[in-house]
View 1: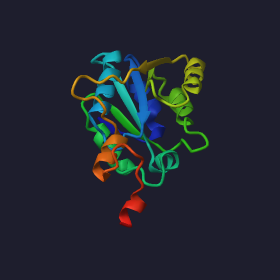
View 2 (view 1 turned 45 degrees about the horizontal axis):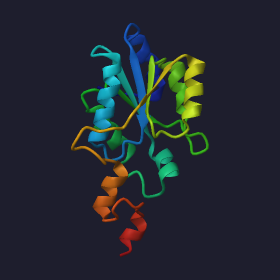
View 3 (view 1 turned 180 degrees about the vertical axis):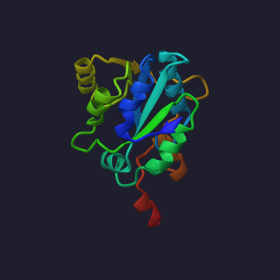
View 4 (view 1 turned 180 degrees about the horizontal axis):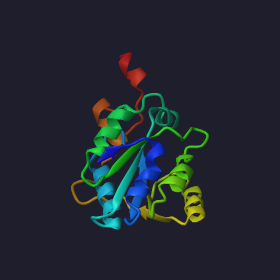
Length: 180
């Protein structure tokens, strides 16, 4: 388990040239059991000797996409938590994507890491663009169902934040909350 700069992705491929690599990315703000299940599923696809590389969205891109009240945990804290999880072999912070090009990271990762599999969930945004980029680089796209096992239904970062702030699933606004 290692947090690396984006510029070292080609080194990961070089060091693991004979192993299958799966790549996934996300915000992972307030990491929860659903994230762990996703990483376990990703790792299962490449087997115990395979490599799981996870991109963690930068604070800047998460704020641009999800609003000024996010992320709750800064990019370094989120990367550290993700990197500490058993299925994860390498973690990096996505400092490439922008609000205008939220999937810019894919080109860099695919060119340098050359993963065998790119894993996303069924509710990922802009799946058509992701499919096209995978086709361009001949990388298999796996789309995972988010059906959790019994007892873990309804777990989401937004839901957790809503419970903490008492908003019952409604979008929260930390600045409005602090004025009360």
